[in-house]
Image (cartoon, rainbow, N blue to C red; front, top):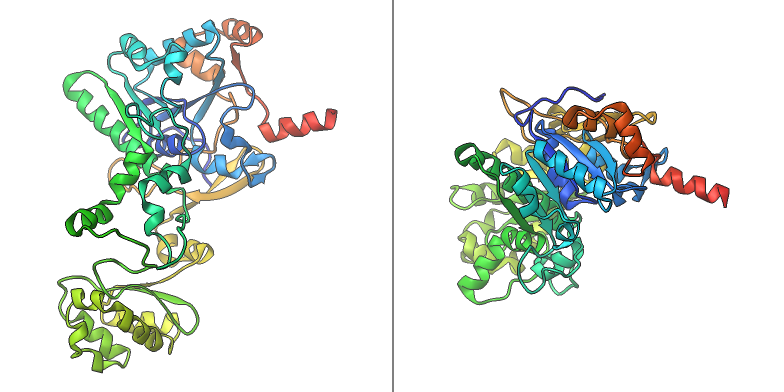
Amino acid sequence: MTKAKQATGPLSGVIVLDLTWVLAGPFGSEILCDLGAEVIKVERPPFGDVARTTGPHIKNESGYFFSVNRGKKSICLDLKRPAGKDLFLRLTEKADVVMENFTPGTMESLGLSYETLSARNPRLVYAATSGFGQTGPDRLRPALDIVVQGMGGIMSITGEPGGPPVRPGISLGDISAGLYTAIGILAALHERERSGRGQMVDISMLDCQIAILENAFMRYFATGETPGPIGTRHPLATPFQAFPTKDGWIVLALSWGVPNQWELLCATISRPDLIDDPRFDSPALRTEHHAELEPMLNEALRQRTTEEWLREFDAIDLPCGPLNDIPHAADHPQVVAREMLVEVEHPAGFSLKVPDTPVRLSRTPGGIQGPPPGIGEHTDEVLTSLLGLSTPEIAELRAAEVVFGPLPSPVEALKQREGQA
């Protein structure tokens, strides 16, 4: 099991003040944490990150929060109080990165704009993740994952032909923004080594949706045709999709430019007659005539189980794989061999398996740094180590309700309130 440990990894020594909450920002800071950065969540009293209230809950702790905040530290302070704002400004002078995912203008209203922070620390990298970015007519619109997925177009090309729009099975709007936020921060830190100066990273969730739809936009501008949903198929290669088998599904993906794959497939599924069919003589023709081809392949592949077909196709090096549900993906031998799901022990007395970082480095490996923090669990530690405050000074700030922690989990606190009502 993974417990709290000394930070390791290529970003060891990088200090991140993380004001982000829920998913897009925390997913980005989680990437940095796994790579060794000291990520300090700056949470507001009394309940901290809203994600702490999101289920499922295990012993009053949020599994959702656990999954994207393990390994981080937490301090709790009131940024609306002058003394709280002053503490944050002083922490900024010690930090390498500040991250936030508020509506544009929120940090300015607190007196904590990028300009203000960079004046205190010119080397600071400031990353702002928002629904629509810091500029443009929609900059102040509220945005959640599904909103930007809808606006960006991805839901219009997801699902079955003729069916309603479908949301992908993950929060792709948040996740892609978190990935690009981490990339932007790493690029800015790298450039700082040359210039000695930090800069602002402006990430729009909608921009990220546009960026990851490169193929759809390319096809639209190249052909003038509006892309639509096509199920599991690829728009340019055929066969390149999920097919039903005797007991489940299998995914086949024939590549462009690889000789004999089509012929080998046809022979293996006992349909050699398709090899010389002029309708299917090339990937482009097979795509053009997919409506005629797909039922023939479905019928052939339903004759055997997924495992039987995998053995057949693996023997001829045909790109294929099972279509796993989540339990089977978790137990897949390749996932197990790569140790991609790691059991992390929580101080509350339970453990939870969560995905590890997929970034594998030969000399400076990262990895999960420990369990998620309690609200304000590290308030005293951070104020002492970074600002040199004494125990009496911290006690005075706590008495004045400037800093807080450690605080009970929001779920536990709400249960206590309900019990007293």
